Amino acid sequence: MYIVVGDKEIARKIARIYSNCVFVGKDTDDLKDINVIEGDPLEIIPKLDLSSAKVVLASDESTNSKIAEFLKSKGVDVVEVNVERVCDLYRKLRIDRASNGTGVRRKYLETVVGKSLSGVPLRRMDMGDECAVVSVFRGGKLLRPHPELILKEGDTLGILCGEEIRQARNPFDNILRILRGYRDEDIITESRMLSERFESNIITLKLVSGNAGIVKDLTKLDEADLVVTSAIKKKDNLIEELSKVHPTVVARGKREYKKILAVVNSSDPFKIISLSKVFARAFDYVKLLLLEKEQLVYASKVIETSVDVSVTEGNPFVEFVREFKRRYDLLIISLKNDVGNIDEDIIWKVIVDMDTSVLLV
Image 1 (cartoon, rainbow, N blue to C red):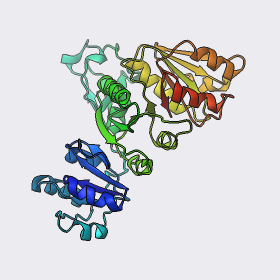
Image 2 (image 1 turned 90 degrees about the vertical axis):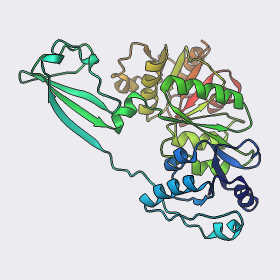
Image 3 (image 1 turned 90 degrees about the horizontal axis):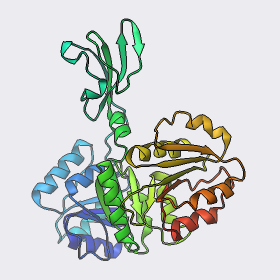
């Protein structure tokens, strides 16, 4: 994959020979035949996995130097070209993987409550986005921290800080919306609503019709936590590939999810159950439908009051159809579909033809 930063003419020249080309920049309106990621290159490039990419820096000197500095800090070779020599040079580009690393950084610390916080409920403590109180020690006893716990002078608070704390509070830091030339307005409307609800950034990819293969590389975006796009046909290969990597919303232009149905039709139920909890915190109502009684073990820790948990008693497929007819705004379901006897064609009919948005995991 070739990534061109800044110069649209260079992107056009490369795209004439290699269809696997992406332009990164703010001005993309007249690029109708090239895949683009719209936005500030300084924000987008650090989020890309460049393991299979060849990067052409062809923006202004300031942007080039800042991106080059980032790539060099990651041990990546940097090549800067001009438009006259690009056709000779881009074939020689070799960029290694640029990664933020895989190590999980955590920090645990303890602090003693003083007089100023005595009598204050735990919820009043501002711990920031990446820290949370995980334990409270009082008189030699361990107390479970909860928002209404009244602190006392001398309490010892165990505080855990790390990226996973922030993700638990706001799991969708970045939303990747993929415009395919089909229901684009629905994608834009729904991704904007989700961005506002989860306080997420939006990255926009305009995909050239018939060139879906490039998305396989772009799904490696390190920080694309949620994808919003459209499904053009049943068993859409793009949708299948995306949902293997990221939770993927097939949008219908919803401005609100008043009713959400989560169906646990996978032998790996954790993702569906976790997402039902996430959406229950952000929206009004989630119905969690378990297709087997054994799944109750996994759902036992669902304590959100806006999650209504139920188990099918008879035929799971029949009960799913009956429940779905109650007109939900969003359906959370898995394409893995290896639990229950839900007809795969019915799932795809919902994805492609129905008015309900679908979140695939």
